[in-house]
Image (cartoon, rainbow, N blue to C red; front, side, top):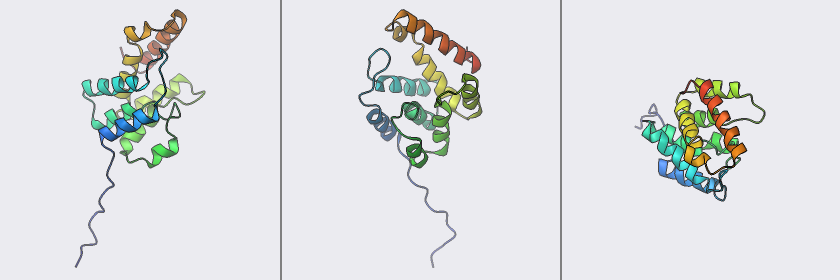
Length: 157
């Protein structure tokens, strides 16, 4: 007789290598503000999360942190993706919504377990002086002020 009370096997989640490959494909052809392939930013944010002691779920969220915001992947895709609910929540938390006040955005990040580390790594790479040096003066100044404000609202030094 078969035991019908056993828990069903949970679906297999994407591995970090699969998430990375997916993120690279989703952002293929996109460049950052300095004209560099966007995947370099994703790799830097994922590496930053890893270096800061982040979990695999946080690293996966780092690879996907701009995917929905940049329309590289849809919210519908994210909802059905073979990712943990924690990873999905972190991606949603760090996804800036059109017209959303920065205070609401940062409050959502702070309220979502694991998301602060992903955003901290994103901000660290975005505000890297070597990266900012590639931009024109007005853009560099605007972004430096923007990143400083977000860091302050998140309680990051």
